[in-house]
Amino acid sequence: MGYIRGAVRFLVACLVLLGLLPPLLAALDGPADLGRLLPAEFAGWRPAGEDRAFTRDTIFEYMDGAGEIYLAYGFRRLLVREYAGPSGSPLVAEIYDMAGPADAYGIAANDQDGEDIAVGRDGLYGGGLLRFWKGPYFVRLLAEKETDGTRGLLAEMGRAIAAAIPEEGPRPALMDALPAEHLDRKSLRYFHKQVSLNNHYYLADENVLLLDERTEVALARYREGWEKVLLLVCRYRSAADARSAYMKFGRDYFAARTDAGGGPVIEKIENGEFAGARQADAFVILVFQSSDRAACAALLRAAESRIQEVFPWKSTEAKEKE
View 1 (cartoon, one colour):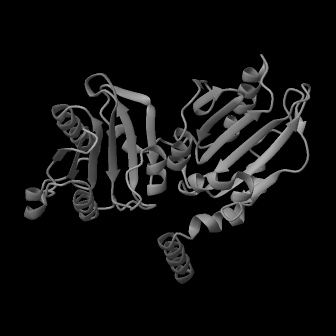
View 2 (cartoon, rainbow, N blue to C red; view 1 turned 90 degrees about the vertical axis):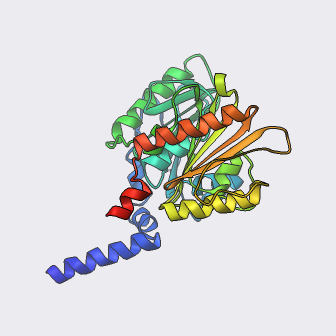
View 3 (cartoon, rainbow, N blue to C red; view 1 turned 135 degrees about the horizontal axis):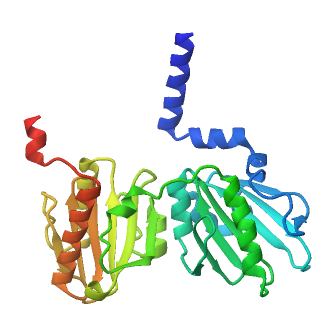
């Protein structure tokens, strides 16, 4: 019996290592599992027609090129249900099953236009569209025609869906590692890959920061003292990976020689703005679009200090003594 348990654990470990476990679990769960999270009826509204289900292989049938954005956040599957009701104009519910709460948060934060609404986590409403995340799920509710009662109707439906999701799910810890002072909270973004970075801030065609599905990136804008300054914090699997990314970025982006010790580099680039970078343990911190060298340096220092509070690391001297 112990041999069987050991073999199962070994198989699961191999699937995790190869990145095959999430797709396998998605296939085992099936779209019906997502359907249970949507109300069978509410306030006189009932499903119209069959649910439509999409996977990683078929997501482009539903959203064309936008599917790349979802795939970059570990998208597993999507269920779409249309409702018909008293108004005559349909409502559409979309529930996206992502790789986990961090990716559900990330895809929800990808677009923060709209007014805050107390539905699920980080609920937003605008123009007949309500969206929120909870646990590993991202939910979009869309009214084909907006009326005076649309906001309340979608909020009622959204709260019913949120109540059916048992897992709350934490926001990524990396978001807590951003300096709070002067932060524009509506600018917060979280992602993993180059395609997502270029969607928010075009840096280069080449993957100059060596981003992949296992890196974490937080993006934010700062105002007042750091007016319209952009901060990127990239978290890698190790300090060695961060060093490789920092050195590659330095070689490709800056004219000056990048400090092999990870120290800060700040330069005025072609458009007259200042850009800065530094490595701190498993993190690479970058500042762009700063009009002032001192402000650029200050944000680099503030970010490093805050990161070390949230993710404390041992100094090189302490590691060498162990």
